[in-house]
Image 1 (tube, rainbow, N blue to C red):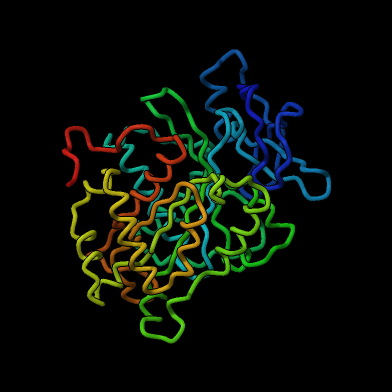
Image 2 (cartoon, rainbow, N blue to C red):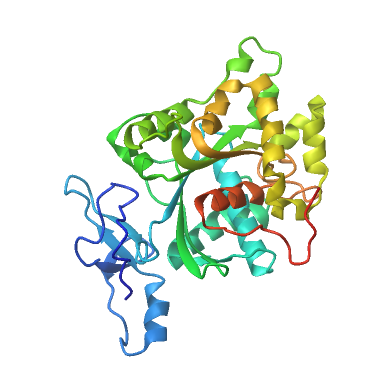
Length: 364
């Protein structure tokens, strides 16, 4: 089993305990979450052992004040992991957006449209996310249920390799119920482990609040909880900014096109190839900033408080549910959901080259 890099201090993203103080305790989990020690079938067979390790976890005992929890076995192997928090209040569409993002990322990697190689950091966790969320949304066109429960755990864990640098990066995602984010209890210590943020603004809420008194000052309490905690654990730049990357996404923003916003028509009018052109991020960010300043400038804290940030329009489905349970086939599909993730990867150093389709001319 590979060991973590000695020059990197990695902490558990759930309880913040430093990892690497002792050898990891590898276990396997059954369908009910029961664990048993992981013992390779044949340690002399390196290929077989690596394959078996993909479904193994390591136990983190924390500081002894809480129940043990499980992390991907190779969580600390590739240097400091990119720990991405998907932030927003309940019913903003966070889970749906994340499922569309990861589905788009996997598709782009598998079809060689992206200078990144993406696979599972932990096969069991990743397969569960793809089966429960990505496939149900993008293949079966089901409306995903709200994220519920008080248990803090990883939503998905990926290994992202950059052929340009030859480096592998562990990238993990937290998708926590908005109600859970809106409290400051001990269970939310995981917020302090986040080193990249995706703030989700509900475009449907923006459309409903159009013209309402006080709508321009609208914001998100979940944003404030996360920002307050991060402000206490991170040093700020001389300009008073948090030295972390953030991507702010107006989800369901296709709904706002009915209100005559020309910038939305322009961005949604581009073809799929434009999502791979990161040279347009600054221009898109200006348009999103302008719209939110007019409609709900409180949401802009998800971008204004960070040294590196980008702002995006996106739609995870491209259409509304036709019966409350499924989306109609006509017009269905994620739109502009990959670009926020690529922008975040670039700001975090995971992606170090322009994300263009081979031979594709940059969008102008």
